[in-house]
Length: 442
Image (cartoon, rainbow, N blue to C red; front, side, top):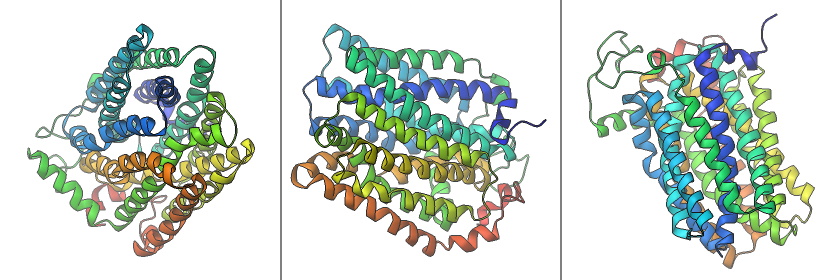
């Protein structure tokens, strides 16, 4: 009896090692999301201080993600992933030690958040680029769906819930120590990744995939940082479905990230009369929604109208957030976050698969990093503005605008990029490898 479609990637050893380490690491990241918030509050911080720390993390991510993408195309991806996990371990262990000793200050947490952001900037392009090297094309949707299932369960649900309990029962510093233990475990497991199977040669060596002109077996020419970056930018600008997806993502991040990351803890406190445990469980419910959406997508075939399904899912899913600022019921807020998590994950699983199926392999690291850079470029702005905006505007108005802008932008992106025509012209469910060598003319 064949394995369920969502479980097929587990037949590959390297994937099993990679996904195990990733699961532990993202569980730790979920704990950090709550531990960091209440560590800042424990140090006497409020919305402005929380905005400062959250902004530091997003600046680290956005500021280095382009370098991370180029590194993923030049340096062995296995080494990048292991190095990032080692850096995560070092910074979290340092914060834990300072907190336990009573020496922790706000700027320590901000520096730590910045370093974690830099690590993420190098990790995600390498992870996106390594998957097509260890899995066949027909298993990529399932692999992205599995990650999309584990991430909300562990990063948005289990991790925050456990951290919330630790904060309430012990202290924020104990939760940070738990985060350090997670990164230590992930670091050890990642060292079991096979060297010979995964270490791609640096730029300038013989690649197992086509060189920049699409001719297999040719030796890639060593180019500069900016030449590599220009090539990725050029491809993105001349690929309408990719360009307008990034435009939508950029706008959505500006309007959504700040309210969710910075203002939601105070919605819990002021509107719902809740504490860290309620905040953690609300994030958990959003994570469960994301897991349901990801698992459902991974268990099915890639939709024929994949671009339309992706954009409609993203647009509709933000509508419930428009009412969060006026809700005084835990279950109403929970329902809104569940819908947001589920629909967002449906779109993300499809999007990740499209990058790996429609973007040429030698550009995948750079295009992935450009996607992160463009879609997250306004994250620091959103984080930085959320706190001050809440000082002069009612919270209900901030959430109303955030939930209303994104659906409109989704419709605009569909129309301007002519996505319905594009997806019919490139039927991935019947020709999984076609665009691996032809996407440059997309």
